[in-house]
Image (cartoon, rainbow, N blue to C red; front, side, top):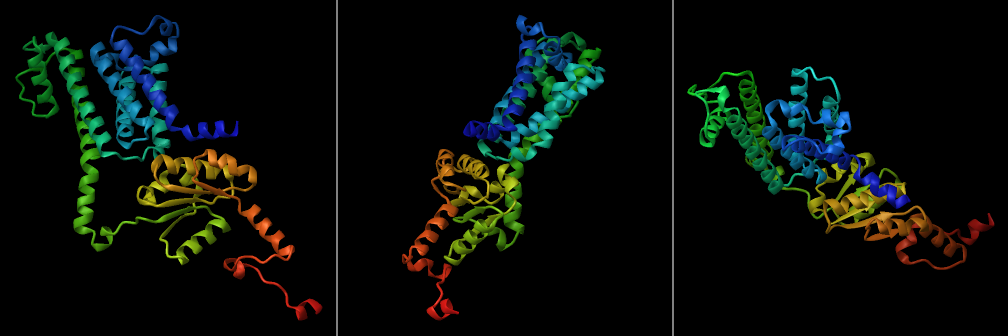
Length: 373
């Protein structure tokens, strides 16, 4: 039960948020492709939940639902780019609801998604360039497809009327680029709403795509050029010690004295959210020492460390012999119980046994004169 609750805690909150985004996308996709399944239509809340984006037409709603599902999958990996696009789509959906004066269940889902992603933003810090490029390209392709299909379906709402896909694609690209030649003009309310949404979608998604893909590259390059020599040296081959107690403090001191580069994380709660381990450059570290006073926290840190860097060596501290097995199940490479070890050494001293020379500075015995006095 303890390990089960620990694994569930490890999935919070990114897994529920990812599922919520996936559900929202699936409902919009199903509605856009011909309506919700009969079983879901029995629930009024579920039927209303997918209604926000229907204002743009079924095909466009289906495309936007697909984009939400892509973001949901990315959120399971705690990636930053899908997080940004999910927030963008939720804001657009909330805006549509407010515009339509929809104060019902259709507004609840997007608001929950938006608030959850903002509040738990620290859980979505993983940056994978390949994943960012894929999500960005899919999002750009989605908005282009959204504009092309929507424009083609509402072709009679434009002057001159749009009667083929190539003209719809042309109008979409002209609108997204904000050139606006004026040779094709929306004349109906629905066509104008589609054009406005296409401009909003396009600017927002293109800006997000550039920020999430080129942004880190540009920032790194500017740091290299203008940051001076200090920026050229990044912490690597170091040991990360997590904990705010005496064990963590003395472990860090001993490792430093023996020539290791040590990064100390005192704020355990940030380490449990994975943010501190990422900031400590765990990808280039050699070892993580989980030395908190709570065995469950050491187990979570061990799991997170292995998730962020499967090759890293993790040493976890256990408060008792019972904790040794549980921490081993958390994928720690080595586990030991300092209190049990200390008790065993103390018993050896009490029995008059000689301890190894390495421990000589940690204990002392009274001389005969001191004993008599």
